[in-house]
Amino acid sequence: RDDVTLVANAADGDVMRLTAAAPHRVVFAGPDGFHVRDDAVWRDDERLLDAGETSLLGTHNLRNVAAALTVLSEAGVPPDAALPGIRL
Image (cartoon, rainbow, N blue to C red; front, side, top):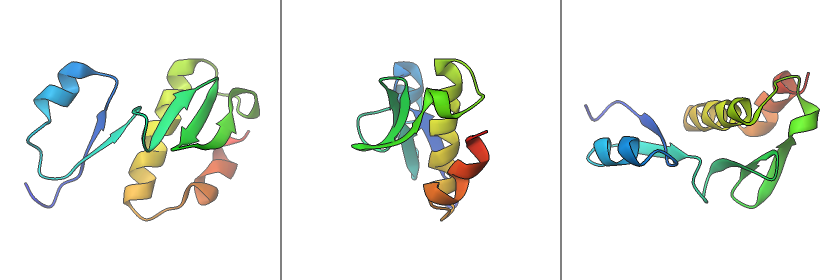
């Protein structure tokens, strides 16, 4: 469907292969956009959230934050509006 945005994890080769033909695919966990590196969530080259700033434990939860920020960004919500709720 052309009216659906598909959010895909760029770190999962199978997901990327299976969603390659999606009309509007947005990815996270790649070098561009929202991703995790050095125990932090980044957007492109901007460090947004360090692991120590949230009560969410584990790298998998930082990846979940990157996914959520990707969805919110697609909906027009800037990261600055969402991050205070994540910094607990």
